Amino acid sequence: MTRHDTAEKRETTTTTTPLMRGAAAAAFDPSSSGGGEGGKEGRTRRRASAADFGVLTLALLAALAFLVAGVLAAPPEGLKRRKEIREMTCDEWSRFSNAVNAFRLAGRWNEFSELHTDPAVWKVAHSDTSGLQLAFLPWHRAFLHRMEKGLQEVDPEVTIPYWNWALDSENPLASPVFSDLFFGSSGDPGASHCVTSGAFGDDANDTCVKRSLPAAGGGGGFLTLANLKEVLTENPDYARFVNRMENGFGLHGHLHMFLGGDMANLNSPNDPLFYAHHSFVDMLWWRWQQMHHSAGSPDYKGNAEAPLYPFSESASDMFSTEELGYTYSDPLERDPADNASVPCFLERGGQHDIVALGEKVWVNLPDDVAALRSLPREAPLPETRYFTQWMELQETQKGGLTLEQIESQISGVTDIIAQPAVTTKVWSYRGNENFGLGFPISMVLPPGEQIVAESCPYKDECSNCLNSYQEVQESTCIDRYPEDFSKKLEKAVTREFRKQTTPAAAEGDEAAPVELVGEEDAGPTEAQGGEVGGSPPADAP
Image (cartoon, rainbow, N blue to C red; front, side, top):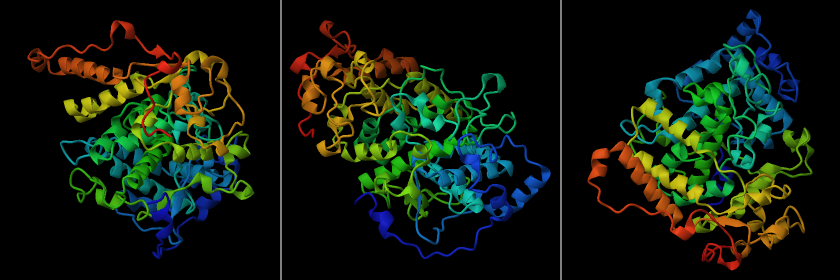
């Protein structure tokens, strides 16, 4: 199954009645500058008058049934395509941001965020194993689909973009996503952390988006594209995959806590970034379904026909995005010569088509877990405090996590920590050859598709250019733990966790303590010629 087999072959003949736009479309004209850089007209800091509110409410009355009733009909002209934020044209971004602001002014936005605070909803939406099991992915697909259909009542051309945060792995705080053009930055601590920049800026405490990003220089990095492909590749079982995606180190929960404010609380859908983040999670599930040929009927755990409370749809209704009327775009299909499709990010000063580059890197990454783990990291590690904070929030809402749920995440933490890395002293003088993607992309891109020709920023410090697995093996600038360190660390952390959570069981455990490293292996070892970390994976490219 190729990337777009299903999306391109499936056509729909479903017809729908014309959507109500009227005054809402006039009040939030996609051609206005509200979604553009520095534009104010479409933002919610413009206080709505009673007349505005009435007009918008009338225009949106048709959407009121979407929160509980099913809305599975596909659009009449084929599949909608969701794009990465930095892939959208200025017109597409403006339409999306204006529709969101129309929803917010009309009071519809709060209905979605408040729904997410319902404890009964949380137990289904976040894979409560005592009830409807492992519904995190299909529930959020249904939730986003409802929001998207509601926004399309304002503007039928709108789709929810996704934020591929792995493109920002080296320096998350510098992401264009936090710019005034898009979602704005952190909120003002002196004003309840209200976000006043970006397309959704609002300084009113009762209606604003609250966000609390880490201070400059803090927060660590994000997982890389290689890390994400490893997660998809090594978890063919749905139960393992959904648990890892929802709760795993550096994944879904990490982003919630990193963004802070609304996103770190139960009313997280109040921040429009919630939808961009979950759209990316949905896209990764979509990729996983294609990778493991389970788009139609994944190995779902639990009753796939039970309604996804409080919705009428079941998990089985959510297995196919194409049947829901949408798919995800292929950034490599865009013709660079087509001025009408130029991403707004590039039109407003972006230097590189990072979304297309990220896609090119993704499709060339190996499908072998050992090879993926051998790619040296060149980005700060995600900070573990966000993993801890997410697990604490889960425990608070679920009334306690099982030992199995916690232990299933420990290997994900230790695998990332034990990943080989380019020594940090190299980071200080190299250029932007990897475009912030967090690892030497020349290792995976074919020779004819290298982005920076005849560039070798690593030569002086590393003795070679890190263009292949063999060069990584021979390099003098790779920090690497002993080969069995990850497994030893996993055992040690698991043992310590069991002692803290089940002391009675731990007292009867006479197994010898786990020794992490020998005297000669007190920490990560810096590469010394050909002795680095043993041989490369047998089937490494």
